[in-house]
Length: 146
Ligand SMILES: [Zn+2]
Ligand SMILES: [Zn+2]
Image (tube, rainbow, N blue to C red):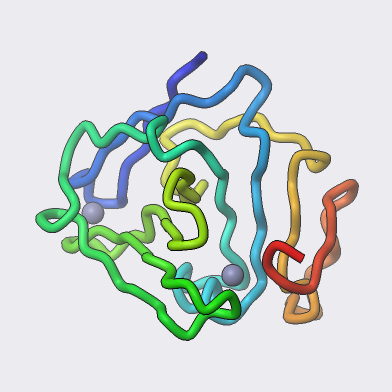
C-alpha cells in the first residue's frame, strides 16, 4: 500500500501514513463546534486509518506532540486531540471509543490523497455553516456515528 507523508506547519512533526490504493476507506468532514475550534476553521477534514498505519518519523507524543483530551463528548468516551507544541497545527485524534483507529487531519498531508465524495461522511451537518453546501455524494449525518 502506498505511503503518504505529512507534517505540521513548522516541520517539527512528520509522519508517514499507509493508505490503501484508491484512498482511505473513510474520510470525514465534521461541522461540530469542537472540530471548528480544534481546526480553527469552519469544519475539520480527517481521514481514518488503523492506528498502526500512522508512523511518526519526526517528533513524539509527550515531547514535540502535545495532547488535549475532551471528556464531555456525546459518547461519554474521551477524545484525544494531538497537536504540535511549537506551531499549534492540529495533527490527529484518537478516541476511547476505539483506540485501534486514528483520525488524521487531512490538511497535514504534504500531498493530497485522492478521495471520492462517496467515501466521505459529513458529521454534525445541523451545525454546517450556512454558506457551505453539502458535499455531492457524501453521506450526511447529524451526529457522530449515528
Ligand atoms: Zn509544528
Ligand atoms: Zn466534530
